[in-house]
Image (cartoon, rainbow, N blue to C red; front, side, top):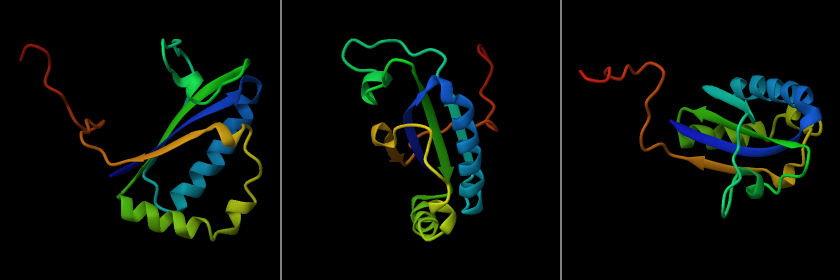
Length: 126
């Protein structure tokens, strides 16, 4: 498993436009083997003392934070898919994202622990 995550500042009034853009992107990534995508719209983001999600992306007044991640089979699979995706003409015709892409944060990660939906933790006390 390989995980790509993003933190994105999105104008609050562009929530539906973002959702449509994300749905198109999810279909595109699925075509290239992405296993899962989760798109999360800000609900509660506390102000930090030194840093926080807002400061990390220089969020402006009226912007909400989107936290999203993609799960790929492996790093090698992701890298091969990414190379092929950049050759796909749909990448160019996807249109402008409804946010300032220069301020998003992207990171890719190799998991060191995973408790997935199929895992059933032991009940407390036994």
